[in-house]
Image (cartoon, rainbow, N blue to C red; front, side):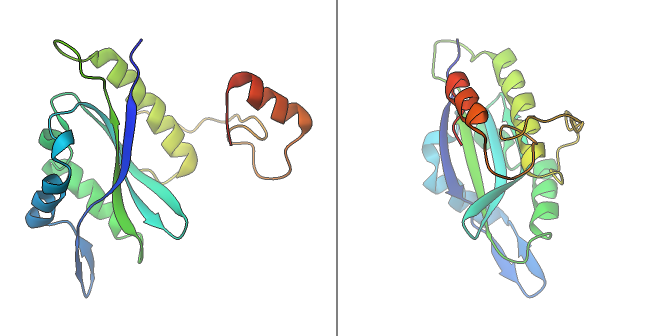
Length: 168
């Protein structure tokens, strides 16, 4: 079994201009200067924004070669810029979901499965998620668990959460 670990949120430096925000080359260098230990790690990552008391996912990706090599690639930066212009305020952030260090390559199949799972969760949290693949909206939910709306949770739902190891 592959057990991933979570690191973050890590603040992503950015340039604030009169017309909006952007992530420049020097901001990327600053980011990696402060997050050196994750440069060669592999796994998944979530680019989002922290505003108020919460975080909103904007793009979810996987890094099978290494986070530094893949996270700020040109086509990914384009997605991040598109996401940033949707928010007047907030701080760009990254979460790393890191594959365990082991001899040889990490389990790429598990990284792919994790990415698909995270995209599903991210799409539930933000229907405007910028991922293209695996974003088919589910047309079902479980009240008090996932896509079930808001409201008071029943005793049955609380017991189900406890039994299934779901915390909210």
